[in-house]
Length: 159
Image 1 (tube, helix red, strand yellow):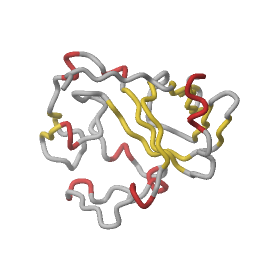
Image 2: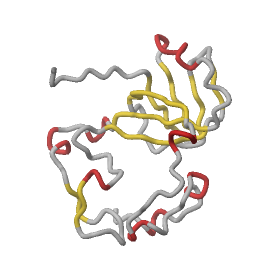
Image 3: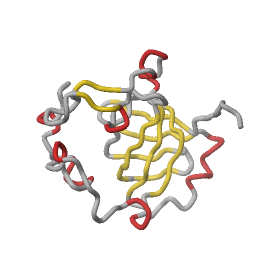
């Protein structure tokens, strides 16, 4: 078994001036076929701004959320600082332009020019968990994507 993994971006995130677009490489545009009709997709992307040997070695975080424990393992956070800086966002789809390979979004929590690793359609039968359990320190966070947009996230984060 090889210890090397090769990931080739399928596109880049464009996050500029309040507009958010997934720009898919010309070589991968046909992979968007039949994505219409899915109201949401899951975007896996690379946190290129956090990809340093030092940041990849960070395995704990000092209280990233106001009500969280004093120290947390990085796998218990959604931090971009990770051993492998792969991030995941569920996002709404506004429009898909097959000719340009652009997927317009209302928002994504990715930095401009973040490499896109993959896109998957959001499927409730696979992706939604009816009775998900949460630790007490985050139990009062929004229970769905739609409520997150109006939630006061500044009251949660310590940074």
